Length: 203
Ligand SMILES: [Mg+2]
Ligand SMILES: [Zn+2]
Image (cartoon, rainbow, N blue to C red; front, top):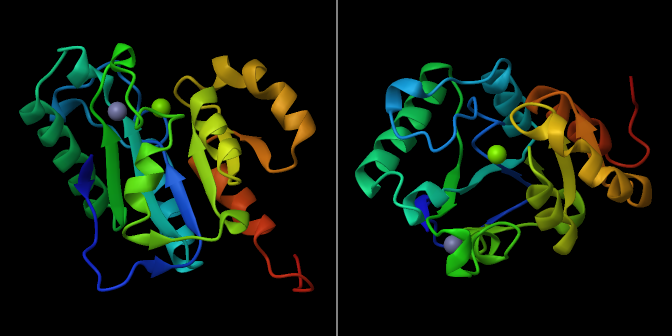
């Protein structure tokens, strides 16, 4: 489902960072339903600004199974989503779009990560080069989504990430585009270092 997406005559071209919300952008609190609980993780606004300045589109992708499980309703989800946008804006940052899966795992939908549905929805507003685009998340399902679609993937240690690290160890050993970083800021730094055009000076 679309929470927010740009309406452009043509999809925006260029690399995309697909960024998980809970445990990456904001502190993960299981089934967060109160906007007062929205807490940006340290370094997030600065990292988003750096990625945007480097030309990446910033697209949030979030499993919100709390809806499908009946833990909260659409109004609570909307209030939290609005608060996330607002908190980022207050810090001088923002996402270009946000998509979410509202289903419970038992629904067997296409959009629950690592299903392809959220990327399919994003494809109507963004046209990305998979070789230069990345998924950043705190769960193995985020890494899996990236790997299935030829995107790079960074597991961050925030949120559930530290506990998921062993799950992606084999992928990391096998695939240079699977990375592990302390947090979103470190993940963005890795992506930007990786994305330097061939032959460009590195410092
Ligand atoms: Mg998460
Ligand atoms: Zn879904």
